[in-house]
Image (tube, rainbow, N blue to C red):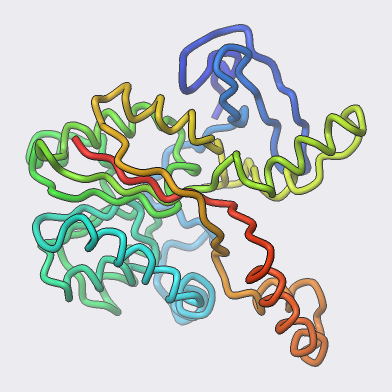
Length: 299
């Protein structure tokens, strides 16, 4: 989708130009507030899938979800523990619930849980395989949510969602309307203050623009790709713009998939993965690389 990328998606300041031309995206850096975002937006979401042109839930789609999307279920332990630290019951909305493991867990914890998932295959998986209800593919900005559920939710969660949306400001405005007074918003998203992003920026400066390092892997103009990455300062600005008070913003390390998944893609051979895996685990245990942030805010 074409849009005027010279106007910052966060602060609205104009006159911005592309700074990083990456393999899969062009990244604009706002000269007013420093926000980083791509020059790309997705077209209409309805009926699309992130990884397939098909919207039918067949055996291939189920296998993908269970082997890839849900291959690291322990990452949701952190999410569950964080929510329960602040709220033990009530109404909950999971926006972009993916494979729905967190959503199902919160139902089991006794929450009155609802979900939004724009990916048709993931939505069908949650309905037909997991048997979940109170879920649909209507975006949170839709009148269905904005009119029926204004001030309804005690908890709203965005797990690996904010970096993918076209308009994070519009999303936050819609979320603010759905939260009860005193309700909590939880966000898990990549952090621009982390080593992966900063190392790419340093390489770019040192090489006078020739090298971009890991920046190539952090942004994508593919469907549902990473369209923006927030710093902690950006996050505070976004929250306070809609009267959401930051309770805590903490950086941590998390991979979407287990380490073995990435090693298999790089090393190809199982015996090499078996040798490398203990060393990789030790490295990340010793070297505290924090690539993401967990945000807790309250209305």
